[in-house]
Image 1 (tube, rainbow, N blue to C red):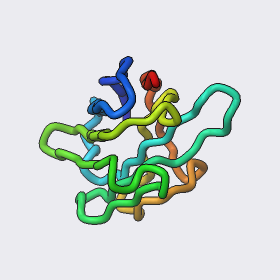
Image 2 (image 1 turned 45 degrees about the vertical axis):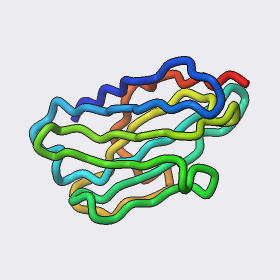
Image 3 (image 1 turned 180 degrees about the vertical axis):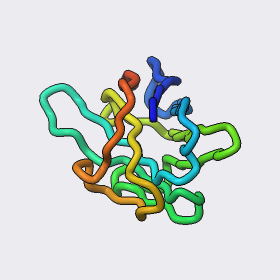
Image 4 (image 1 turned 30 degrees about the horizontal axis):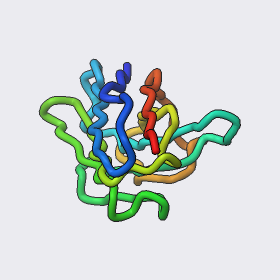
Length: 124
């Protein structure tokens, strides 16, 4: 599993960004996937997760109703559509994968594979 996150950038408050995470491996479709973020001086925090089949999703309370996670197993990608962005959303965003067929989870310690991160900056 090799995860590559992209799509970060600078956006004004209220704007939108769409993050993507691609996997070059052959077993992507069996991995539950998650997005996490880490702001400067803060702990890494859970953002969203999706089951291997895309049926179940989890969201942090802080992003519910604003962010949407999705996956396309045919393309080995997941996405995070982020709307109504706030300055507090500023962070480096990481995608991660759990082991095969396990449920989605908000605990970062349960994720085995991590991408390199993409910076999201929301200006006020």
